Length: 190
Image (cartoon, rainbow, N blue to C red; front, side, top):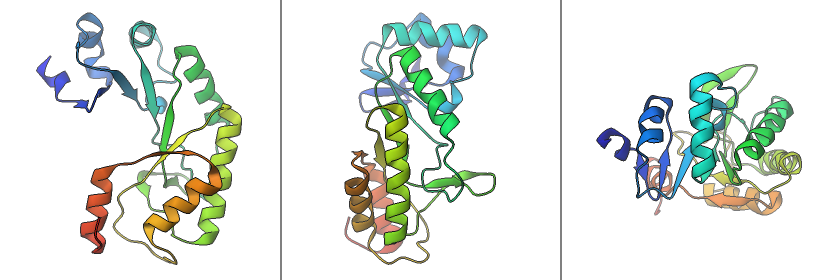
């Protein structure tokens, strides 16, 4: 159980399949909610699917996505969003957040790539966020990411982030560590 407690982040717990059996049998008493990457659970059936269902029937869950690729120039994967909507409804999950980044360009890149901080990128990504919210029929939260380079940068990171959130009319998930990392990498006062 100590290995499970090491995953506790704030009042939530990241749920991983390797710990699922242990958590189902002895859920930690000090966890307020569980966080899952939906793309890792949406198609799980069998034993893990039943265990996951047992957990979502007893505890609060949130989804924090890794694969939406909200900033990609590839077409928005609307089927993924519809599948996500069904998954969230099936398990009573009311909150979804995603990274302000992209992870696909003609295929999956397996990394969260930074957005160019431009007005064109603001319009592009805000439109995609609005479309996701329309399909899900709910607001989503966008998380700031850490980045090593900002090619084509026309505006500061904070101005870009605020413009996206304002134009998309979405919620915010702030990662304080990412702000700190970016301040060190890019030499600004966090």
